[in-house]
Length: 283
Image 1 (cartoon, rainbow, N blue to C red):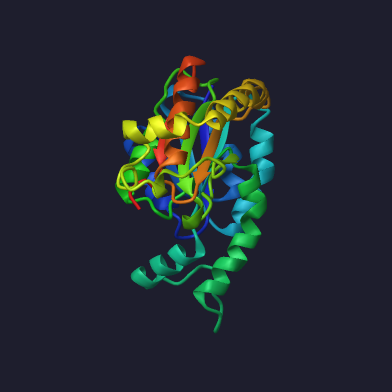
Image 2 (image 1 turned 120 degrees about the vertical axis):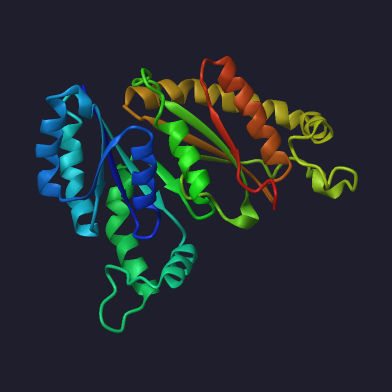
């Protein structure tokens, strides 16, 4: 059985970088893959063990949309088939195109990069909806992206496991683009208003004690655990490979970090091996 990964996403969001990183991780990578050839390449890969881990970078927006039907067909073939979608905010994509002076593939005539990005984003919404995993590269360095891909795609022998990630964030910095479930903990008292706690983060014991001393914190975590006890097996039964749970507070430094760490502990006790990211803890 081959492990097949289709790499899609917005132009400038990091598909080529992801391809290079996966190649370093031992995947056989084919860049700018025409949709018409995907089935043939998969057939060749299935014939030998040397191509057991195959990553196909789908090129143009039109090709990516066409890959949806191929993806659905391959999922019934007996192989492990996943799609990775790379995303980034419009502002970040515009900045990247400005830095590289490259022309956006959908830019025509006098239309600018911003219009081209908006057009591409609209075209790729159905592709993103089919993706097993979405990674927002807006705030990731190339090293952070490589590290994240390494954590996600080097779990040999755990093909049937669903990988759970937890991310804390601050609403004032915007919602994460790449999450499945979002929970708002701004109903809890904010340690920010305590001058002694303000310089600290949710990783520090005094802040943890403050947040967990609130009666609502325990009740919320209990209800969240019950919900995830119901949802995790259901998501896995539906074939979902990745699940990202986001916990948000105002700034992403105190309450959300504490609750995310508590959720991490519960997941570990439940037999999961969660990946935890505190997106805005340093802001």
